[in-house]
Length: 118
Image 1 (cartoon, rainbow, N blue to C red):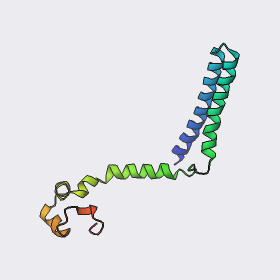
Image 2: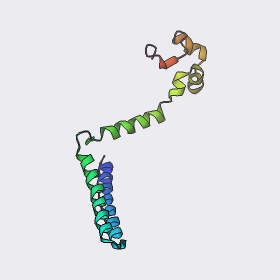
Image 3: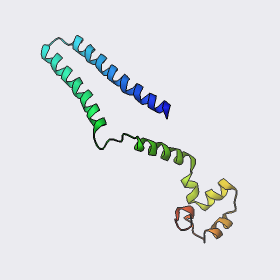
Image 4: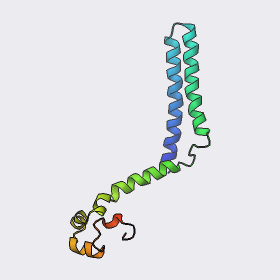
């Protein structure tokens, strides 16, 4: 968790620094005064909208969505739902006779996708 926290701080700081460096570059390379003003306002708008989104009520400050997504990704990589849905694949994966699996599951071919059997 500490690595994730430090990475989050680094990304936010790097984003701010990169945005300001890009703003300075655009200002210095622009010839027209009105374009300098408009470009500066655009960069400030981008910065403010990012901060406003982070401070809004629907934003997930505790990173629950990120945690849930990481857990779901880990489960999808570990739990092979395709294998759990097919008696043939299940028997091949775990070296159990297919007839035995079907007998235990009351001849339900949906196997562990059936909540009652699972």
